[in-house]
Length: 153
Image 1 (tube, rainbow, N blue to C red):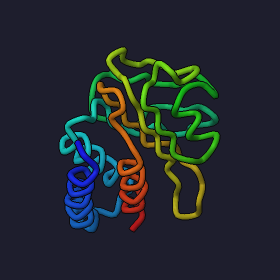
Image 2 (cartoon, helix red, strand yellow; image 1 turned 120 degrees about the vertical axis):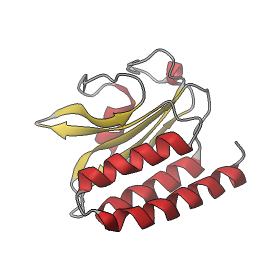
Image 3 (cartoon, one colour; image 1 turned 180 degrees about the vertical axis):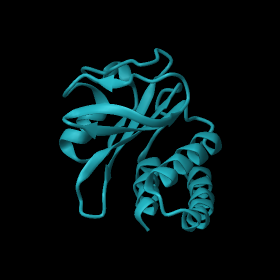
């Protein structure tokens, strides 16, 4: 998908989510809605979900797609890179990422966006996998950072 078409789709998704968020103030309900909308509106998303920090462990919470790894090995893989750097991590080819954790061998590219609460505490990450190489770019990253802010609006 070219950048202009992708941005247009994200703009429509953002507007839809912006209208849905006021219907429920529960952050977990909002997260569930965000991943459902993203997963079903972005055709190159293969797995869409959140991993949360829990007593120093990174564990799956809510997601859409194939069965997930329930707990990720400490300081390994793309999700932990996002946690440890507190920055988005865009991986065009997961085979080239040292220590990549393959919860499903069909995943080819990945984008991880850290999730912070309103006080800037790191809660975990939004993790999105694609079964296509080079599926994600800066358009995805920028829009997902913006969408995650709706959780607390």
